[in-house]
Length: 60
Image 1 (tube, helix red, strand yellow):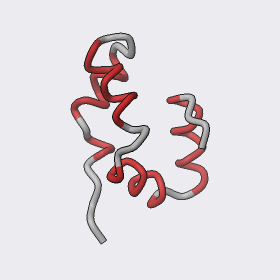
Image 2 (tube, one colour; image 1 turned 90 degrees about the vertical axis):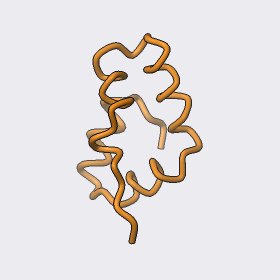
Image 3 (cartoon, one colour; image 1 turned 30 degrees about the vertical axis):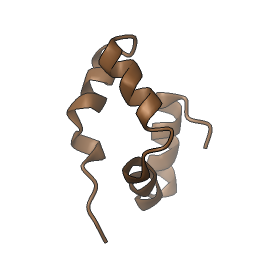
């Protein structure tokens, strides 16, 4: 299984600092269809998924 660098992604970190920046908005748009992000989310346990859903207001 491939490892995911999503936890240490520099673009994600920029979103965390300033979600309204261009890079932050790009990251948010990108995760809607990124297979790496979907794989990363699916590799987490339910508690970790809930934390990310709450932090990033994700629907799934």
